[in-house]
Length: 229
Image 1 (spheres, rainbow, N blue to C red):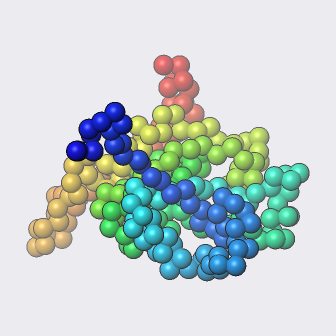
Image 2: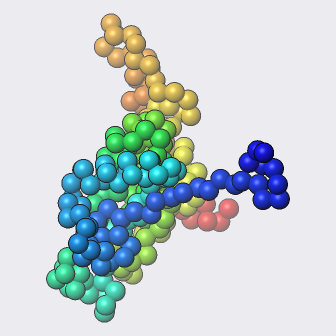
Image 3: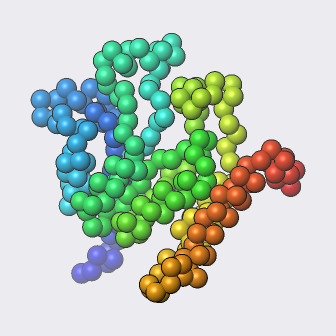
């Protein structure tokens, strides 16, 4: 009898490990367990997590992110600093690189805010991660909402930047421009005799063009024009 026979055919589960790049899991007191590791700032800690997820047939290891310390009690992060729990999260994409080097098939996902990171920067970061890990990168598109995040980025809570309009479409286009791929393969630099081959010239020009186009897209005039369309 095959797996598809009978009234209850087999179905495949998609397993995602929801992770924290910090000294505890979603259960804030987990660090106090006698068997909890205390080296959450070491590469071996995250390499081990990646290998466990892959051996357990998980499809994706995913890190959420927050650009400020928790200040849930009276909008004051003093309690967080005092106890040191969930105080600072490591950079999620850097940690994903460690997981990627320790695994072969595990998907690698992370939260990355469109409120404070420019489209060109996001495109290059995730395109690089995707290339360096053989096509395993995933991006969780979010906008930031905490006042502490705005303050960390040099803005008060009432002066939060407007999220980029239609960020996934814009960043998908900038991914190709940032790495000179234009939706295809990386440019070939096989002509070693030339100091600057045509493909390399186009590659450099595409980066400059991408940066200029993003600045134009984010201008107030352009934002008003898109908002009226």
